[in-house]
Length: 161
Image 1 (cartoon, helix red, strand yellow):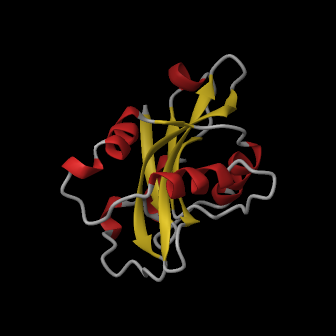
Image 2 (cartoon, rainbow, N blue to C red):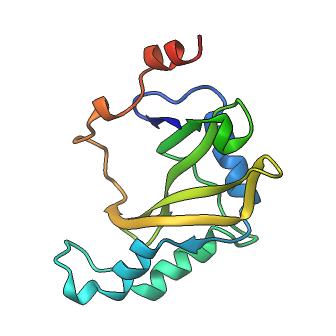
Image 3 (tube, one colour):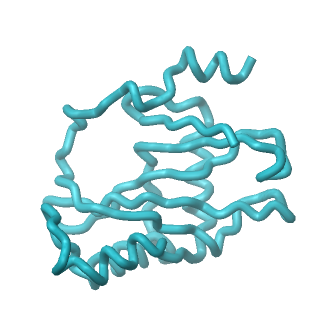
């Protein structure tokens, strides 16, 4: 499988943000990765810069699938391509990161892996893995963003010749 990672402050191909918003709009359920479940369960034993409030995390995540949800542009998006895995020749959204309001001054940053159904050749709206999440100040302006980790417009063009 070939994957590329995009960041909104570096480059996102035309139409990709709209694909993510459609995934958000169709999302009906999610599940937590084993990693994230363990993190929530073992916070008192971990040396972290912040502690999640379990109920606040679950409330923020529930908002993602509520009827009154607000759709949020992703700041990071992974696209992948592999006919054997997806059954199509197209680029598929395999991960995206969004910010959900957490407190007045912080957001819960959530990493989502929408699950692909090869039989229907589409994302399964009821299966979205929450890979991990962390708290970030809502005024964060990415001063430490490592742009070399993300796909440039030039590289994207070369991938699609």
